Length: 511
Image 1 (cartoon, rainbow, N blue to C red):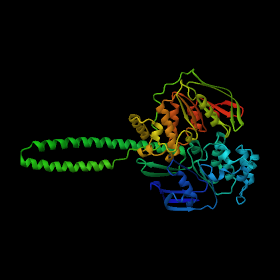
Image 2 (tube, helix red, strand yellow):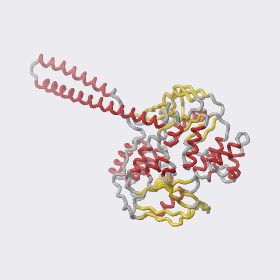
Image 3 (cartoon, rainbow, N blue to C red):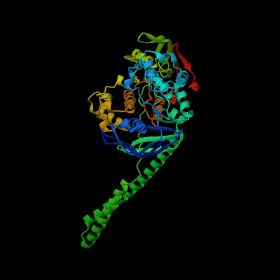
Image 4 (tube, rainbow, N blue to C red):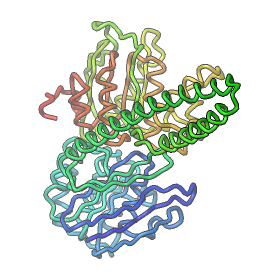
């Protein structure tokens, strides 16, 4: 259905390659996942696969692309701006040229628990929750005739029930699916081929890999390859260091003999020997340049909450009694009860639009300003706390203290930020880089209570195990709104489901 040969994508602005020498054949029925860190060109590659006109003006490409399909469906990462002002009625029914399979439309609405009576509603798409925006796009697009589906982060903001449905749909559909995803569970259950976009050598070089493996098998193969390369590189460096030390001693001995000899004949012989020694030194320098590269994980997150003073186990932090969630006068949930102590780790799930993010914000407002806790907050919408014109360095070290700023720069470097990225405006950063800023800020501030709204949503699947480990080992208390099943199972001690009637505890095995 799709054949790509020797494809290279280059960003017009900075002339950096995003994709390098990609060759792949996508056959009918394939489920192809594109993975990689934020900003590595995943969405651009997805668009190019559909139509090169979609990347015109900001991406140049070289290579051959053959498309053997005439109809496709595209689900973008965010609701297009031009659709935000539409009512649900206009979104579903105003486009008379688009042919919908109405049997599928109403079937998908039922399966995704979206009230089909809302199809004719005057409610604007912009006023829906993030998950509902994605859900209505899924319902409409999947009911449209197509040969291939292109999905960009289809699991973002979806509730767990819908995520499970999406996994099953991608697995079982006979259609070809190409999708960008950060969701490890979705990748593990649905992908049959992986395209991994990386930037190596301090982000100066693109590396593109294609493997005909499921995600778990790819993870194991990649880890084994990384360990093998690391072992080889270290061994070569040890041997080279020994050779250089031996060379240094020989050079010192010859230099000493040259300085002390008074015999002209011996001096000429020593000078000749020195020339050979210097020549050997140049060969060692060339060998050093050709040593096996020490592998660096682009997704590495070298962080630990090492100096957090945990609150007492029995300390009552928050007690909710018959709390309400209201938005614009409409009650979303009532009779919310929650008791939260000093080292509890709690996960909150629930259907899209029920008010989970609003509940977390209400908790944050109640706890702000308390002198007995050090609270850290990671909102779902980072712009609530990040100013676009601020630099990462200013966000993390607002004072002019030189020592503090140098510490922050070194910590940013450990998170794969370049010096330029540390000083450029935050508006230039990817979602994953912005998420790293929140993690680092919480570590630096030594927060002993964290409120997290979808903390893993912008991290690549290869980064997420490290993020889970960071929070699993965190000694303080946390409450996290999340749809990430692995995060909920590995980090949270208790999980509560929010509905219109309040919070109800859910067993982990039911997640």
